[in-house]
Image (cartoon, rainbow, N blue to C red):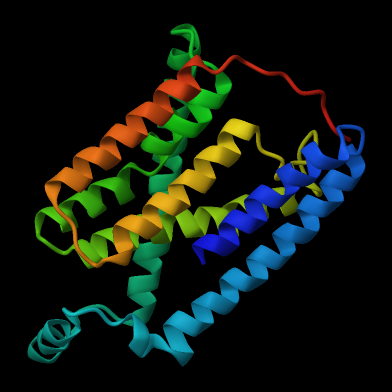
Length: 236
């Protein structure tokens, strides 16, 4: 799924820089069609992982989960659980939006560029709940779950959230959104996928790998911080 996300997010930018910059209308159409493909694939992947082949995604702790399930009866019904989930999601999204708005204003006053705010500041604050959960699972030595949360969140953004925003922008908003990212963003996506594959491929982890990952993130943050502000003309 990570490689599909890379292809879907990088090819529009490759088309932009290979064909030329005078094809804005075609870029919008290309981004829209790719977004539709990505969203359809995302829902098919949910069907695969949650229904048809869910046994492939049961970790080592599945047996203990089954024991807990049999030893303790559930106190919430499915309707209650879904209602609480949707309510909590809505409240977290609302709080994150307020927090991001406040931090965004402060970041602009501190001289941060829009690309740094979007790639670093908004990403950290908007996903604070997922980050904290991943860290807590890592502290409890549940690295499979921790990595699953981190990678699953990235896949959800790449295959669902970003394509959904592209589609919605064709019906609402002042301009069409596309998937044409800057060279620095494309390089960051490519490196992130390569590093993720190398880190999770061997099934092992240690604190030195964590330090290296933090160092890579800080280096990328410094690159985006010193990246000059680039303004693009609106596309209609």
